[in-house]
Length: 107
Ligand code: HEC
Image 1 (cartoon, helix red, strand yellow):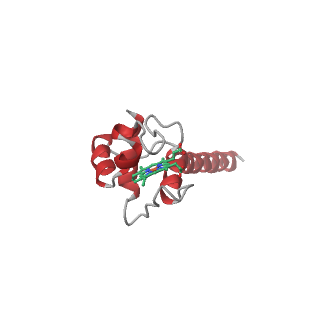
Image 2: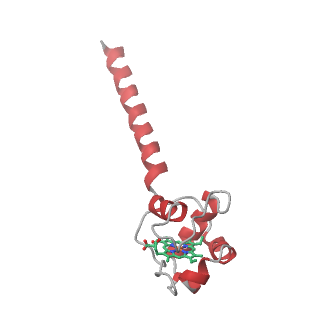
């Protein structure tokens, strides 16, 4: 009896760890370096539309974003308007997009 209960606890903690792992990889802030964000932002000419430091210009301000990294990636890969060009992962990798996302949050 004793050993069975122990096993059960072990399984539960493994499941809890898996849920934590999945949760953190989906929702939280990505790994990235905000110090590189501005460089990728300019290289991809985001500044031409969204202004220097994402403060807005021809397109809405995107500095200090309130949306999640997932939503940010979705907006970049599949913009809601025809004006905003779609950036595929060939043009802008997830890692570089994470740098931009983190940098924008600091502006
Ligand atoms: C040719 C102009 C143009 C360029 C270049 C451009 N955008 Fe946009 N972007 C827009 C416009 C217009 C919108 C608003 C309409 C929409 O949501 O699609 C927008 C919307 C967005 C949004 C969503 C804002 C919101 O509040 O919903 C994000 C995030 C964004 N752009 C990020 C970027 C990033 C990052 C880059 C560079 C990799 C970039 N954009 C390049 C024009 C541009």
